[in-house]
Image (cartoon, rainbow, N blue to C red; front, side):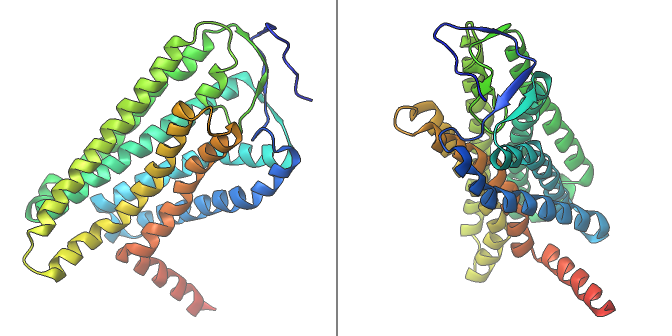
Length: 320
């Protein structure tokens, strides 16, 4: 049974938090496992298959597909960082989570989100070079440079997100031990602490604006260059082919940023107009929907991957 905090009551730093899932739904949130369960399963199977296909097929060991594999690995980690706990809370009810595990989950959720945003920017730059300078693409974009870019993005994500758990760990007292959320989101934990949380609020806001803002500007600029180049092509067929190479990436960008932007805006500016259960539901969808959709989008719209999957299934079917 979750404690009901009394006015002005405080608790020492708890050894265990209690995650309640989406507040106000009670036992009815078990039905949401019918939505989030398939999402998580699809994320596991889809991204796992994507990684296996890229690893097995040597013809896919090219910069574009290595970036795609990086995205799949990031999606796999992001979905796994919240999926099992989310489903357990919704199906079984409020679940205890050790304090240290809460901080670890907080780090991985936010770091992998930042990593995914960076990978999408790298993929947009890759497409801009492929469309804008096709003759120099193989010189400018190499497998080694893709590896260095992935490493740099991972190090950047770690560096900018490490302050989140550290800023929370400095607090010794909390107003409650119950987190009205399905995972340890930074701001959900900060709402419970006793003390001056100005640094947490400012850093969270600055990080959201800096990371997402810079990445969105970079992606917009890359596609501005792509559009400028494509519109100058002489034939309609050439323009359609050039846009076709970018269409799957555009779909992935929309799947990631649109729910994320809506969730962010409702949290920052719609607290009094958007009910808290709606915001928490949106934040869960934001983290699980892109990992579930990305493999479907790339599997359906990328010819090389689609052909490789068809060959694999056709070969296995012929063996029986």
